[in-house]
Length: 418
Ligand SMILES: *Cc1c(COP(=O)(O)O)cnc(C)c1O
Image 1 (tube, rainbow, N blue to C red):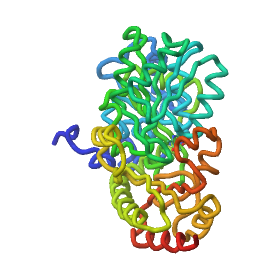
Image 2 (cartoon, rainbow, N blue to C red):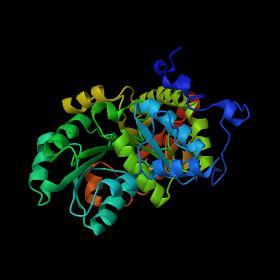
Image 3 (cartoon, rainbow, N blue to C red):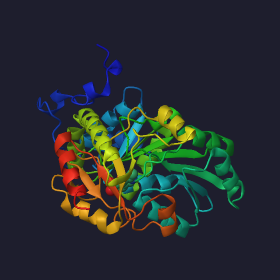
Image 4 (cartoon, protein in one colour):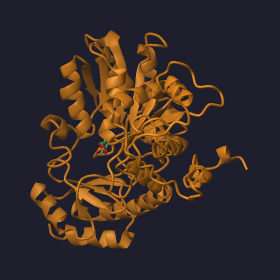
């Protein structure tokens, strides 16, 4: 049978792992080692030549194991498996999502460059862009879901560094209100502003909310796809990790910088994520089905003013609906809602929840609720918070794998506290 034609979920238990190299162990062991013994000095020399880019890898040559900052079986096998979902050439895993994000921004931007980024964006990314990148002389320019391609081009044209556009970084759907950005539209803008093949404007997409199952940015022309693997990929709220995927030439640069920053994931993290990948699809599918039921309940609830959920597109404009249809294969398992009231009432609801945990983070087996305005988005400028409807009455909910009836009962009794 041709394994390359199989669905990723069928390969998550075996792909890239050879039991006979590990005493027949069915599961990949944790290679808890910092360094690897070479058979001969000649072999060590050959491994280093390839690792340091002194020569190309031979056709049948395997990349030799050297030292766990450069490579480790738990990371390599995990990276090979991650590639299957996004149909990427290569992947690199990191010890956090922020580590993955900051590494690509540092590798592909230099002082004087212009970075265009979508708003609202993950708090850590927002801070890194506005407070760190600007400190090293990178120009940054944010755009919002209501900006059309023409609006974005007008913003670039009006910027003094318009000839130095180097990257468009987007997070779609945007957190916490699930506004959408059009990847293909950004790709068209990137093409227009690319000065040459070597100086291409890159598109990077944070796919944490919907990936790697329900949105595949590389298929829409993005160059790099990023994950906080802490969320759905890890899926059990027990590990912090990140990943980047893309083409071989771009990933060679990402892995190069990772080697020297030393921010790769540990073997144990790699092992945990491989375990999580085996159930990724069934978890996410079940979570999406439950989210649909929870959303239906909230939409009909008298104490709920508004529900932000990708399966609820009534009142959304044509452009939003068109992006949704092209880019997503599911409405996902994240939703937010405005309760009738303000911060005090939202806190009453959050404090009364018994099954749903009051915590930030998302994508885990247990449902998590939080208050964006005072928690995950507390650092966002007030003006932007108003623009994106991140108010005191907004609650964000990440739907887990609990029985939908129990979640609905819990939300119902909590909403009764208003
Ligand atoms: C959590 C998150 C991050 C950061 O990931 P860490 O693993 O916490 O470093 C980045 N982007 C999004 C969308 C996230 O939800």
